[in-house]
Length: 586
Image 1 (tube, rainbow, N blue to C red):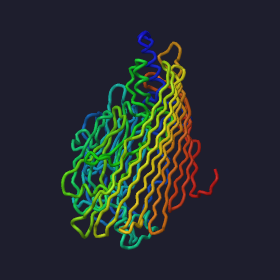
Image 2 (tube, one colour):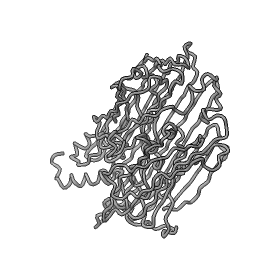
Image 3 (cartoon, one colour):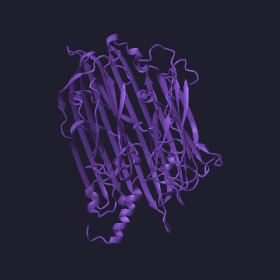
Image 4 (cartoon, rainbow, N blue to C red):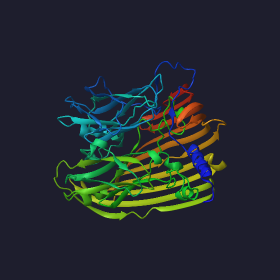
């Protein structure tokens, strides 16, 4: 390979770059049949919207927390404002965020923290000259310990943006938080568990809302409260101390991938890059796994859902329907109650984050949700079982020059168990976690054609047992995040531009099962998007193109079933149908 002329190598590298998923910007308005002189609303079709408590009328309190325009904010600390307490009785808190922009701009990552604990990870739509706007409403009741502080809280917003001669879009943000009361007498119980009716003794044991939330985030807030992971050996730690009367602990983790790992699921192995003398830094293969440690002991892993931002793959797909999770990136929950036997000694401990095979860069932080014994000042606990074998990994790469086939497989199985003795009784929490990942990538036509098939499955089973080994509660969680992507490029003759055809199908599938006192409560979400189209690109600018996007959303729980199907073409909604009946046939 060393005999290949340098100009040919540069050409190969450029071809690989074009055929790989990339981050684009709409520098010109794409002609549609809609009126392009008025700002257009972008939205996430996930359904239903925020549900208010039964009988809720006007909010008990409403606070306009922050209004700010993010222009040249890159490298600046988060913008912060004081959130006053709501002195009226309330049971539900709703975050209300609106953002608008016009001009030319890349998509940007953003987050909102309360006293250093993240409550929303989001990204922006890419604006047009006539303008775009969108709203995000999120139920943040589970963060009540942060919201009920008698003196209020500090709300911080991070959105790094750049304004120059080319990038003109300023993001104008308005943030409010509304508090609603509930006329029922079940304020201490989560609405999704009321139907379970566990024995009265166990009401507080199984309650959904924690008593305390500790931010596991970066103390150097001048660069945001998130930790920035640059490579596979870059580990970040946070020291923390928990109250001695903690009887339950859940870690909520926020993650997002950027830079060379924004499209990690399409990255080739390093041997392919090295043998072809390519200049791309998008390597390390197509598998990523976020792992968490407690005092350097493996505590669990997270299979990340591949969120696609609005400038990704083909930005025409995401007008006005944005990709799954782009406006409200999912957070991930890990039950670390078995580790209380390690943590309840009153001493500082370290929680660590890392990403297997990472390249630059990932943004990660977490919230530690804690449940405290209302009677006892000291809870006893012991970690009795810890099984975390190394990741089982397989890889196969067959290629000749720029054509090749790359297969990846990864599996892991973790089992931890520990007992906690509190005023509620002596209970053992048993956590099993299984992850299985497969990836297949094809390069054809000297890198002009790329096909990506990814399948990821995660299963978590948490059982709470009494001293007689009777299961009092079981929580089973399953997740599948399949993705299929095809990109094909054709160089335009006598031009520096090229045409790219894109086909995408990805899905967010999650199912929860809770069993308590022989009563079963289940919930599920199946959210699927399919897109196909083409675009003419010069550099990172989309000059012309066509895109069709279809989305099917189905959620089912104790409240019923909700279905929604929506389609758009070239920025115009073609249909939008929804129903509350699973028996409905489209």
